[in-house]
Amino acid sequence: MNRTKKLIYLDHSATTPVRPEVVKAMQPFWMTQYGNPSSIHGAGRGANVALTKARQRIASIIGAKEKEIIFTGCGTEGNNAALRGIAHAQRAATGANRIVISAVEHHAVYHTAEDLASNFGFDLTILPVDGLGQVHIDEVESALGLNEEVALVSVMMANNEVGTLQPIGAVGELCKEYDVPFHTDAVQAAGKFPLHVDQLQVDALTISAHKIYGPKGCGFLYLRSGTPFQPILTGGSHENNRRAGTENVPLIVGMAEAFDLIEAEREVESQRLTVLCDRLIEGIQQTIPDVYQTGSPDNRLPNLASFIIQGVEAEGVLIGLDLAGIAASSGSACTSGAQRPSHVLEAMNVPTADAVGGLRLSLGKSTTDDDVDYLLATLPGIVQRIRSFAPAVA
Ligand code: PLP
Image (cartoon, rainbow, N blue to C red; front, top):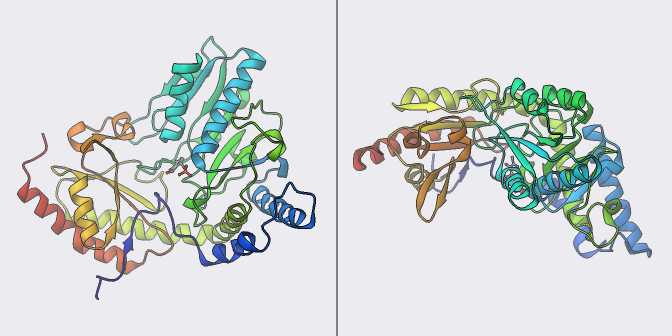
């Protein structure tokens, strides 16, 4: 097969293509139905109807009330709003001053919690994880049992680097017992698992549209009624006074369409991806020496496989894959040309020398059996070539 023309896109955890149905749903709201949903004239009312419909569709998928959905500009904003908005309000209401997060949170939560600690006087507890990247419920319980009052707990549903799932229902139950607001970053879990907010026992939940075949720059925060909250964006009275700024109607309509479509396909597609992903994991372990899987082998996202390839730097592997027409990503943040191990792998106690060889392959709707075969036929040669040129990483 001629592979030079087709991109094998194995980076769906970074972002996904917008589905044609979503583009179609957004289309009228750019140039025809462009009214401001806050305007009282007909054009504005039309946009407002579209906004209300999108809110209803989203609320019904997650078992929420319409007024509990706050549209945001991205997943990062949703996480910022949840952490900053709840922590400040809860402290003002109760004096609680501690924020609890896990050691493997996305930077949008991690750096926000660090900022709240460094610049706003909050105390911060970072829950450790085991070698598979899992938070243990007894750690959550001991953090909640501290003498100081906890303002907020934030633990993600599924990790974006290694795919490990967290025991969200159990964390939610504990938080309820201690009467502490609980937020989960469900950006990677959306479309892969049911997100019923009562079953999950969450008070706040973040979603980003571009991870579910919707547009970039759009998301929402679910906020349970009665949860203390101070808006991070102030101005007009949009979103029930919780997020000022004219709503991005086309993107919001697109997000609702994308969420409905992915929900309808979720079970069947998750099963298909699990089978493909298992074959990919097994194939890599069988064909490449000195490789091990990171994250939980069974309690994980159906579409994400991550590995340490010992004795190579991920950057070289990614370039090799890119030249072969395969898009993948690493578990390392590249800072000024130097590979720095990710905080997730560090928290899982992956040795630094290994962590620079972290590779993440994330499958999606476009991924076929042929794509997995091509990856399995291509990657071993790339790794072998790099290993033969480069001295082993110290
Ligand atoms: N949370 C997780 C787990 C993510 O994977 C991402 C994006 O990679 C985000 C939050 C941020 O989402 P956005 O890119 O919409 O800001």
